[in-house]
Amino acid sequence: MRNLFFILLTGIFAFSSHVCLGQNHAIKAGKIYTMEGNPIENGLVLVSDGKITAVGTQASLTIPEGYTIHEAAIVTPGFIDAHSVVGLAGIYNQKHDSDQLETSNPIQPELRAIDAYNAREELVSYLKVFGITTVNTGHGPGALISGQTMVVKTYGETVDEALVNPFAMVAMTIGSSVADNFEKPGTRAKGVSMLREAFVSAQDYQRKLTNSDISKRPDRNLSNEILVKVLEKEVPALITAQSARDIITAIRLRDEFGFDLIIDGGAEAYSVLEEIKASGVTVVVHPTMVRNYGDTKHATYTNAHKLHQAGIPFVFQSGFEGYVPKTRVVTFEAALAVANGLDYDAALQALTIDAAKLLKLEDRIGSLKPGKDADIALYDGDPFEYTSHVLKVFINGILVSDEAR
Image (tube, rainbow, N blue to C red):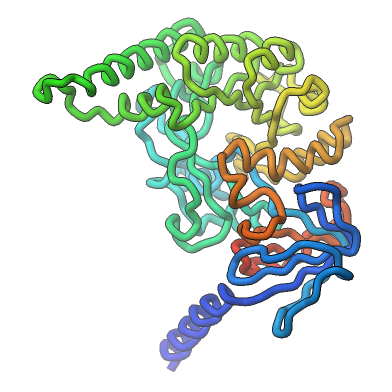
């Protein structure tokens, strides 16, 4: 009898989840940050079949019959975490849930995030209830080339359900942390020389692929194959570089090999602002509350503020930590940056539309606009105020959380 009850309950849940996909929602708010212009006072967002269908004032829009009405003080697009290891690193900090860094080889661009991502990891749900709806996650810092990143929504039972982009970036690291994880390289210079050798090998592989004589084309090499995609600018290199000298080295590598570069971390970016601005790169700024030791010894609370003042594009990340729970809530990192001088609207943009543009997904996420995915967070107050709560979260038009956090 108990088994029969479980089967019936499972069937009902599956059916209700399916029905939820087609639900229509009307979301009222005292203020809506659309990220498509000025905030809308007394605003209204209409959602149907997973997409935003209308955004405007409550006076200008009519709620169609049959829509479920939700109310909040503040509404924003779902926030985007531009770099994480969530889903590869788990809540227990044990070997069985720590797939974010493979230490058998310092150069492994062929490692795919989709092969390790756990959509049911508790940390994914933890982020979701705080209004984080999209994450660029995958192999973490600590290897010269640790592997690939992917973009997922924080909802779904399988990687295929969560998936937005299976291959977003190639994660690399320059700095002293690499020597902590590998016997070789031991120094920065050796590490960079190994990176250069890897790119030279990929260039040679790239040339041989175009040989008119098929018999002279190389055997398939997964490592070179991925680095060729970087060289051809199909995907960018996300290089973790915290110190000023490592940031400059990353830019130098970009200039030598011509790939698209994103600086990850940039703890000392404030000391090389002119060089970063001249390079035109975006900085995925280190978590504001990062522990200050090693390569992040000189990190500051004001880094994001100084990047913004200098006109350098930046976004926020939850980052990577070697202790429980190995991830952060990116909203809190942005809030602390605002408390230390960063413009409020700039922080919201960095968490939404700017991050969407960096991930080349601005046509789907990052703002509240008709036709975009209905990824929406509802708050009872200022999202950057620690006494505020996330009341409800929608992902793809599905109410995935109504637990006030």
